[in-house]
Structures are given as structure tokens and as C-alpha cells.
Image 1 (tube, rainbow, N blue to C red):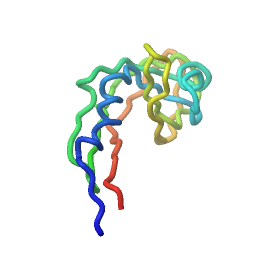
Image 2: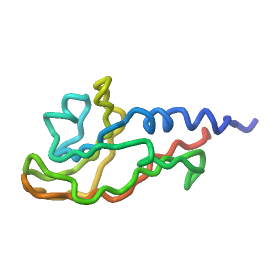
Image 3: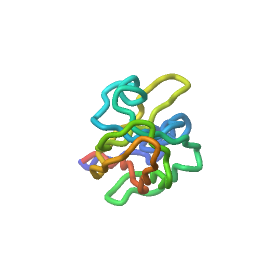
Amino acid sequence: MAKSINPALLDLPLSDIKASANKMVVCSAQPLTYAEASLTYALASVAMVAADYTLAAGDVSGRKATVAAKAGVAVGTSGTGTHIALIDTVNQILKFVTMSTSTAVAAGGTVDVQAWKIEVQVPV
């Protein structure tokens, strides 16, 4: 018997990120907690709003959220960015983490973050 799921259910985690992940952080390592994303590994960060997330049909299957590119993000700490985190600063929750292209950044400079996607695929 084939499996199926209502697409609205696949949108739930993506809609939550869209509604509450109000900051994107360039990190020097993979954060496992809000504190690691917002302080320990944080190199640069930028505010996010709901319009920065676009929900649509997935590239492979299911649903996706495309996270908008951000140019000229101010760098607060020098290091090498290896991960991007989405955090909810109101409730202090780490929402999502992905790997990024390794990029050296210098305090006082800026970094550009390319658009990227989060995809929730249908069950197989």
C-alpha cells in the first residue's frame, strides 16, 4: 500500500520557521543549542522576517521553504563560517541548522549569504 500525507502537514515545520525564526546566524561550527548559535559560534547575524521565507512545492517531493539571500551582513567576530542557523530570539530556540560553504570572515567586515532551501519530503 502506498503512503500519502496531506501537504498541509508538511508545511507545519516550515510555517513555524517562517513565523518565528527571526534571525539568521553565520556560525563557525555546528550549533546544537540556542546559546551555541547565538553566542558561542556566532560570527555574523541578520534579522529575518516572514517575507524572507517562501513556501512552495518541494524540488524532490513534498514542500520547501526558500530562505532569502542576505547581502552585506555585518561580521562581529572573525573566523570561518561553516554553518548557518535560524533562531527564534523571542523564545530562545534553535530552529534549523545547515552546512554552508566554508567562508573566512573578519570582524568589522561583511559577508553575503546566498539563498538556500529547507525541504520536507513525502514519506517513502
